[in-house]
Image (tube, rainbow, N blue to C red):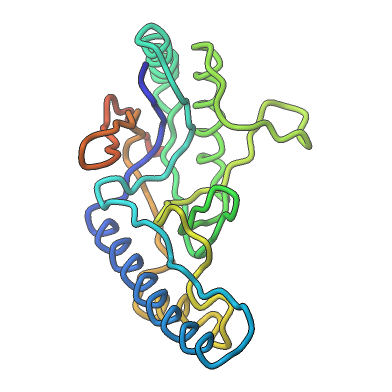
Length: 226
C-alpha cells in the first residue's frame, strides 16, 4: 500500500521564499522563548515558557494538498489514474489552471500545524478540488471530511502550505508586539504568495532513513483558457 495525495508544487523562487518565512518564524520563536524564560525567572508563578515553533518541513516537501487519499493499493491507484485521465480525455479544459494567494500565518492547534494559508477565491481551484474528490470516489477511495452544512459532496478546503509540524503557537502571537512578524514578512515581499501552478501532481509519501519524502508519481497539465 502507498500513502498518496494530490497537490501542487511552488516554483523554485517560492521554495526559497518559504525557507525565508520558516527562518523568520524560527528566529522569532527563539527570541520569544528567551523573553519568556526571563519572565519566568523573575516571577514566582507556575507559568510555562513557550517550547518552540515546531519541526520544520523540509524544502523538498513544500506543497499544497488538493486531496489527501491515504493508503492506496496498486489496483486502486490504477483506477484513480484512469479517473483523473478521463477528465482530459473528455475535454482538455477539464483541469483548468487557477491561482491562489496565501497571505496568512495560521496555526491549527489540533493537528499542530503552522502554515501559510489563504482563501478559496478562484472557482477553478474549487472545481479542481471537487474533481479530485470525484476521481477518488470513482476509484473507491474516501478522502477528506464532508462538510455537513452542504447538501452536495463538497468538502471543506483551505488552501495552505505547511511550514512547521508539532507547532504549539505562532511566534509573537501572544506578546505585545502581536502582528509585527507578519508585517515584516509583508514588508520583505515574502507574503502574500500567489501560486499559479501549471501542473497537478500525484504524490507518494515515503518514510526513509532521513525522514518523510514526497515523490511525484504522475502529473496532469492545468490548462489556461484560450
